[in-house]
Length: 260
Image (cartoon, rainbow, N blue to C red; front, side):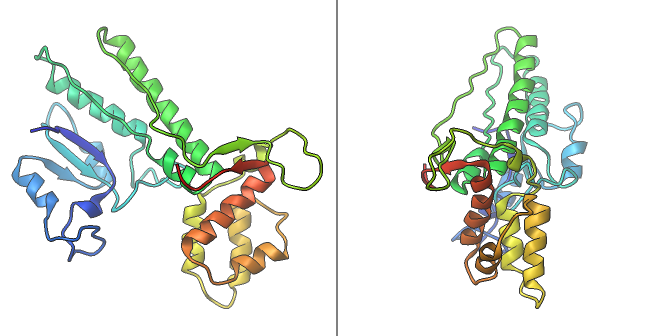
């Protein structure tokens, strides 16, 4: 066995193509296959919380969402564990499993949603992902400090989005400033808000849009153009980028790309 423990999202890649929500192009059922190979499979927060290294044994496979885990800014703690919580649980199980071994263990933890937020140019979602990654690193660093001979390596594979501060938003000579306060008012990712827009086409859609801007982005100084554009027919990604840029403009943040 090459892997003893996996926690995260992406369940759609583990279920056969005929199953609702599947990402596969074939009929392999990797959940069923993993169980045959001895993995304990689970997909709920309750099952995760009930895991106990004194009662349960490796290998473990926990897949909490069909696709990506939720952004930290959107995450429902009753439904999904945080990156820090998954890391803490993994450390407990791996330490217990290797207590009588001189080989130790290797654990890879990825703050993957930092990258996803960069693709969307969503500053609020990204800063929450960076902060939760820092919290996770602090947890692991504490473990390393308490276990001499353990090594922690934290690296990035690439940057995404090309974020820059003090973006020149108007033709006037720029002040070399940026404003973090608009980011602090954001309550949801632009991804979640854009999905709401795609799915709501009732007669009061214009008022619904205003409500999303106010409650989700914390923006009150939107204008007629914002409402008119968002009230038009666009795909989900276009809505997402537009909503992200409403915050970027007010924070004076610039992005070079939606790619790496």
